[in-house]
Image (spheres, rainbow, N blue to C red):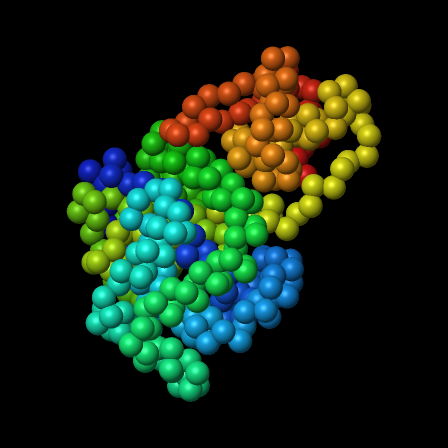
Length: 327
């Protein structure tokens, strides 16, 4: 078990971030059979043809080999976000800037307990340009497996951040951690995480970086060279493979139109236009136009939460959508 001791200044210093390369490496682990599929089986089945097209790339094979369900993984390959809203290009630049000596130390630690890699994988991991080759492999994995679904993935992550950050700011650690994972609990100023190993860490006023993820379970990055990071599965990952098939005609759809009826149903919880756009497979502008009509009719309202604008149903909207919960 990992124990993370929290001090008085850590709440204000804690923040949330998105890590595209963590998602890419985790997605690779799933389709390559290196990690348990869990609830992501439908996505894995859909992604396997794309994986087969890149599976012969030696760098991709090396990255899949390094992926393990538990234990240390080379930090430079899956860098925690140093700040919120990092792009994949920025994270790839971080990978490429890793000194070779550091990368070799981390790879050697990652390989402990794994079987002997085959010659092609060993050639990648022992090459003088190993860092660049792994970075190129990560970019290949990103483009093949994650980028096609990134709008939906990002919307899932952003919606979870809005929910969790609001709880942290309004109610503190205990409420923010409630429901984060069955393996995480708050006990007298300490975050206890059921992660393989036995260690205690002290945030010391630096705060904790919370990173919601779609393609993996609970994890932590608590090395001194990186921001202290706790990764957890975001809520609502089923949106990644659920189709928004049109519903049969109903009274609400006849009244406000099928698209606006579906928006009202989805707004059972507050959401951004980005999330709604990805969920309904429509442009942000088109969603915005429909929301403007619903807002002008008094059925939805909007409010700012940090950098995001959240839409939610009004009481009248709740009445109209009553009995029609989101699918």
